[in-house]
Length: 335
Image 1 (cartoon, one colour):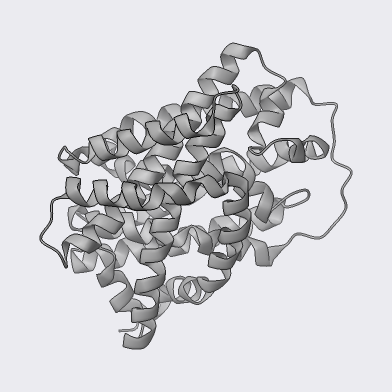
Image 2 (cartoon, helix red, strand yellow; image 1 turned 90 degrees about the vertical axis):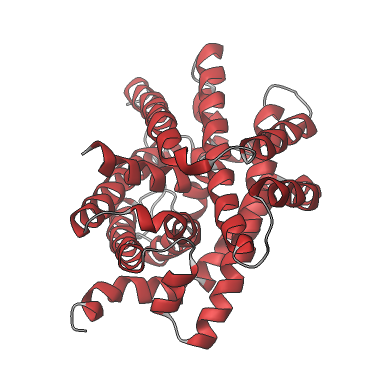
């Protein structure tokens, strides 16, 4: 059971990065009255995870390439191979930028937060990352627990608030939200797919991760809906919630969000580096150092600007991949 939870935590740790933990990504794709849309997302996310995990298990994968090869035609595979690689690089840039934006809340210049995460990312790749699952098994539960405690306390103390927005559930955004989170999962699961031991492990991980993320997303989105008028005052909407809490809670939550940022950046870099190592005979440390030197300048574009401009575009681009993943369990059973 504990080993199965490792995979669940790995997926959740990959998805709950700066965009998600800050609330910016959830609010971008959902918003008020999106309960049914989040249920749709949960179903799509579960099916997609099942396909990713199943292919990784079947192919004993060590990178994301076997997953794409199994799903797509050679031309489409080549396209998504490039798109995945670019997306992972952009994810690293967004996470670096998120680290800078996080510290700005405390009036600390964003370059300090950027420099700190860059140093940490280069440093960790000087070690063997076979313990990545173990790291997630410690950090992600703390992250999820902290986030849930903050949200539940907020909802309990603000039960008199209600959203006034009226509208129909946006199911298309549910698909976009699912598809934008596919590439980092394909990347990280693909890199460690050879460690999966059974189909039962695949089923448990896909169902559990989908239910947990769907539940957290609903609670988070509902909380943000209650303070929708204040969200635009913050680059990271979670701080519109945290303004109702004492300073110590803000500090603890900031630390938790930073861990989420770091884990997502780490997962994305694992995907990039595993792909580059299949072509170049270089150590992980050297590739990590090169990536940080090359990518860091782009992080100064700004966290909110990067999330709101890039995530919807990649959501649309990945819709085809989402469809292939959702139908794979049904077509695979016939082959």
